[in-house]
Image (cartoon, rainbow, N blue to C red):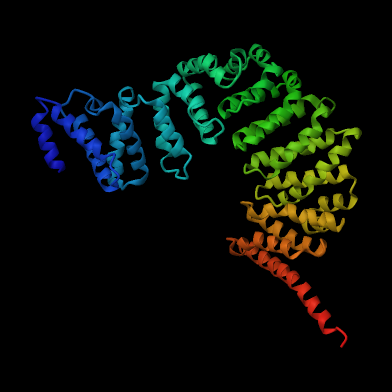
Length: 499
């Protein structure tokens, strides 16, 4: 069939283009069929036709022969095929993509649909297609900067991490392109966009200062705490990332850091999005401000700040874990006597996470956790814990925590269960070992609770790490032994019943 197509096109290439249009019209219909084999064959013929036409005698762009309504569909199907098809077909698909990227004005007119396709596929588990998708995004942004920027902010999910990844990629282009930067500054003052996010043009326009060189004058203009506090409540990761980017700049200078001190609780509220890029910036801002303003100036916010730091101890990013643990240590040191009653509750809740993070596979996180645990013991005036934390004796620290009373041991037992699902084998091991000790110290457990513990431990019997498998099996056996114990006691009582 390919030979027949070539002969047909060669016989008409000097007279009429109508044959090519007719052929492509038929082929594009087949790309919409439910039959995947037919669909793939039709798409393959389109790729080969594009190569034949662009390397042949036709003076017109290949896009002119493809119906406008079908161009975006061909782009998306070609991109999908690049990530899935054979090496030979991938080569033809890449040639088709080259045709598209050389003529983006003709091919990439439907910005929202192409952008939605890029977003959907970047968010998938497949990484093989990502470089190609980012190349398409770069061309799309350079060709239609305003349309792409507006579409990211309005058409893509506002609170999605992939949306933020796309936004950051576009900002990296803006840093090297004055044209894109000017368009972005214009977009940030768009009245319709302000209406969508319920902010004023003055508030949103403030974010343009986060994109230009941070001169003394620009930073002074940016340092408007009331406006920044309102912007921190925006439910859009791309815009929120710009707000935090500006706050990082302000936090790096002592004279502006003190002006944003009271915003730290609002900054930490952004952690609700569970996004690593946002968490890194929030952690950096808090640490910078604490460093520059001093303990006295930081005191009004330390209790609230400490509470918000606890969930970060087990964050997926080692940089976030380390930063939050070091900041927690600084926050404890800043607390004064009248704050310590409320702070003690938070510090107690931090003991178990810090104990587990002492086994973090990132050495700097493990070191920071040990130092913070010593500081916690000092804050709580717990001499035995302080002594064991300084010695870094993990088993002794576990025993120290569990010896307080049965109720506390029981609470620690349940708090340790989420760590069984931690991505780090070292933390899973510590959690299982701690649960085994906690069962000894917490007294009798009901059959229902023991079933819950066994169910949580059961997946670890197949853990990839032998040490985790072994300790989990041992603790499960201990749980099963405790479940059987009441039955044995009842049976023994019946045997001793007087005749």
